[in-house]
Length: 321
Image 1 (cartoon, rainbow, N blue to C red):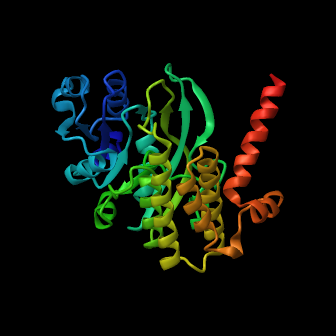
Image 2 (cartoon, rainbow, N blue to C red; image 1 turned 30 degrees about the vertical axis):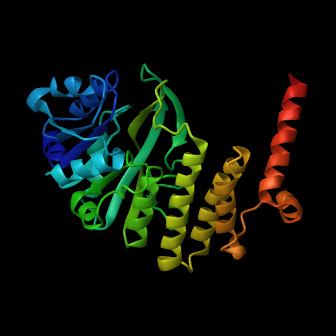
């Protein structure tokens, strides 16, 4: 099977918002993956010169400009326009490494309908030099092969990692635009609790570029942790309805929620922290709280305990300096 035949079965969808200095190299990396791939770039209402950069590629890509609606809306728009049997998402500040599509497709074409192949991602700097092999994805969480729901919940299934069957993604409605944080994990859990299987291959399929620009606008901690609450309530609901007997999955999600709750408490976002700590208590048989914190949590409450710990850390750091 030729490389062009492989790529001809795949649509590459690239959402873009204000990436005038990065979008060109992202498109170039998609083009370099082989002839025949359908490349769809959606400008999500950029206010810089991103659109001019996109349309400069002419008929080599399919370009669309839509009103700003967020990354999920842009990805779903790309999904609606895709003609490939499979979809590979890549963000406008990241890169598709050589051979990524072929590695994914060679496995995917032997799969059943609800099996989804995914690979690994690495962090790279502005020159493309690899910074870290384990900052993204599941390389430290799961061996190659099918992963469990607990393993899925132990990391984040970024949309950069899988090669999604287009028909399957359309059947579940794509990304839920109600989630401006964790929309990728919500989709993955929704797929898996609906019967899909994710299968890892040990191939790097995305280069995540570290740069000075914000990857998302999350300057307001209250808004940020409100999104954490919304996401985790949704994931708890999915597990309660579909996988309530899967104790390892509930334990993995509880650990994830505890991390968010502690971060919210340290950021002094008390309402969100309180809601997140309450979510953990829903499953007392999988309490993720470290043993050394359980007594102070009971005596002083989780929020106040985290405030004390933060104060002690600041005093210790000041003394060291």
